[in-house]
Length: 322
Image (cartoon, rainbow, N blue to C red; front, side, top):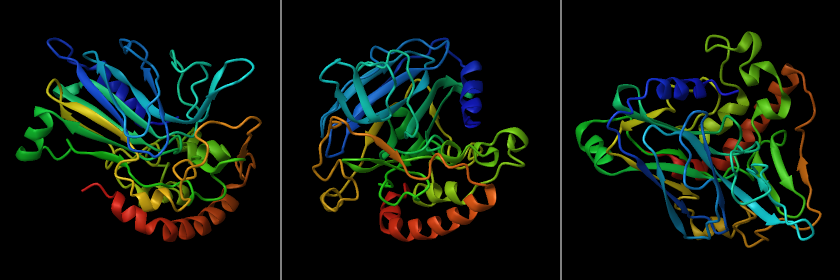
């Protein structure tokens, strides 16, 4: 669905694996609630030592990625094992494996995604944070190591932190918002996922950058998170590169979330509500299954966008990654 995945796949196909070293992902949880990272290797890419685990608030874990690795990682929230069957499931980002390990399963939409191709074309690592498949929690990628240091002092402008540090669930337009019955807004769908319209999915006659343009819905994400992918052809401002073989990466969930935000109710999980799914909890998709016409969706999107930008303005300013 996301055209930028083709860019990452091309980088992987041209990978300069010979002599390359592995990179280390340090995954950190800055949220006020437990997050269960999920990890998925691309087809043909070597497996990681883990595909899922729990991170308590304030906890970090290092994961070594083999040379030439390509794939994605994300955060799962409101997870629990069913008391009667033992099956593990999450309210957002669930990978369908039934266990804490994702074991080759990808994230159910909507979910904030971190995407990587290591040792790619031109001796570079390619990475991005994508909201093309929706959003479920803040996430930022920060390059570290000698490659990142050299870029910061030597003009490597595309070797820089990227992501979405803003909390968007409460401000999500009504047609995209996902609520858990007991926990309030927990995720924000993409317009493609919510409405299935070709112009939002960049498919059919809209399947190229000339015809697929930003929508009012994608602009909601872009206004709050200008370095993250907001729609399929958002490449120019959203793909970042660092020197392969000398750069590691820290992926942080809820980076720098102030205590005041955690206590305002903008994020129900961070406001002290249950961190696990309650028995009988059902997901409610507001407007998500209604097949609106493009004109009606656009009209609603414009109204929602104006309200949402006003609500998120303060958060968005702090989220800009300079």
